[in-house]
Image 1: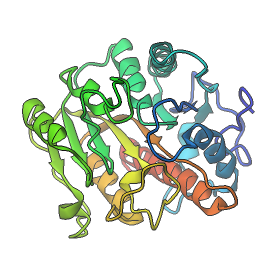
Image 2 (image 1 turned 60 degrees about the horizontal axis):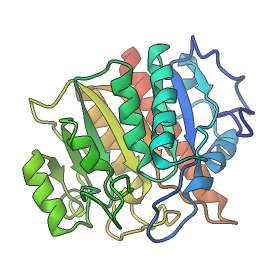
Image 3 (image 1 turned 180 degrees about the vertical axis):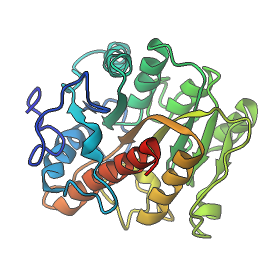
Image 4 (image 1 turned 90 degrees about the horizontal axis):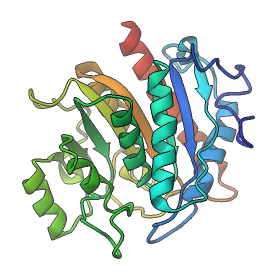
Length: 291
């Protein structure tokens, strides 16, 4: 246990040494601006609890070989600006210890705090690849510039390149923002409809990538357990294959899983979210070690 949260895969491994663990899992139970269904604050604890049912062997390798440390959950009982600062502190601590931060949300605004943490740790030349049902490029939503619907706008305003995958819900303002900020994208009506399994990043896209996965980017038939489901999303293997195609082209410096909202009594979704996170660790582990 760590700060009343289970450690990731705690049924199989001991809590890792933070100085010698490659993966630092950071729970962020933050929910402040959700605009439809709620429950994302419960996501991190449920995912960590479900991870105790995972096999250490992920089907191709053993990501635990690189070491997994579960950090204390970020204290989200504060004003949004303070919460973002706390997230940034936790992420910067992981990077400064030579680890890869893996944040579990929480609403998608959490990713802004994560990016601030990468910058605080001295990482500058990196891009963001996003899987999401929504563009999240509004300047503000319901008068809140730190809304989950504005998180990518805050990130591109930092001159961080962005590539969006699977988006299928956006407004005219967001389409204009894509043009204004030079956002790359392949929307769901392209990659989901045509079952695209890999992408080629532009040559000028940074060599280091942070990958953010809003679980509503996947189809609701797989994950109805989210506050803003949109039909026509990505499939299970397609999502993992797209992530792997990015990992093979660039160096993943961290990733997150956002917007999981547990549905009471349907533990299959909690397990699937935990497995998705671990499968992503496996992809990173194999590209990192050259397996």
